[in-house]
Length: 300
Image (tube, rainbow, N blue to C red):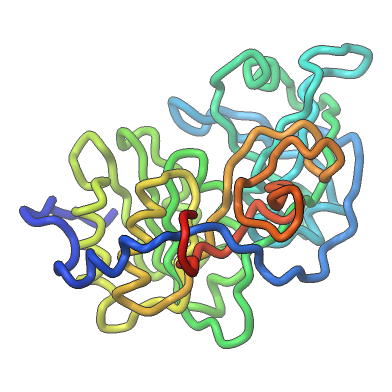
């Protein structure tokens, strides 16, 4: 764990602060070829408490494990066979994959009736899922380094980036939460090659944007990342804007949303981003990963 001391002053110079007051918004990434979507019943082979707040479920889904891209997700049906409730599936980020074992790991928090039902699934039961879904993070050729900024369950959208690219690019990661016991992903990042991992919490003040700005600029000013990837917190997006202006790097954000289908049929998860058509891009199909860029005039 990296220790940080909250700074006395807010982040950035006056000039830098002014430069990030412009309008920012979601911009669709260039659509890349995606893996074939699979619909299958998968066996639950491990289901355990991970922290006080989160649980980890591992299922056998080799067709998904072997093709999923970093940042993609699955739609998981919580209702057991021959039962009709909870009716709608849940979008779940793919936390990790094991291609050799053919397994997919999903982390979730127990927050409502659906996730309470999910928590009741035993090892050996079958659960239905569809995936891999969505637009992945785009770390194209020439990407040498990345900063991953995640908070709470949003961190799960970032971990497969480290799993796939940790051996080939320089990764710095931040996992943020209310308390130390609610943090996830730090050990996973380290196992998969992250150079530096910051574990920051509200309880000790280290998760504030001001503190993170100071810590990250001290760590990375000498060799800034090529791209910032973030999920789970609006204030982390705002921090990303300030850092991107300082370092002249790109931002990609994974957008969290409730979904009914996950494949674009229901049109229930419009992103609100600008569009030339009548409807804004869909988070499930055009996202969940978007570029986050300064927009020419107007509001985001």
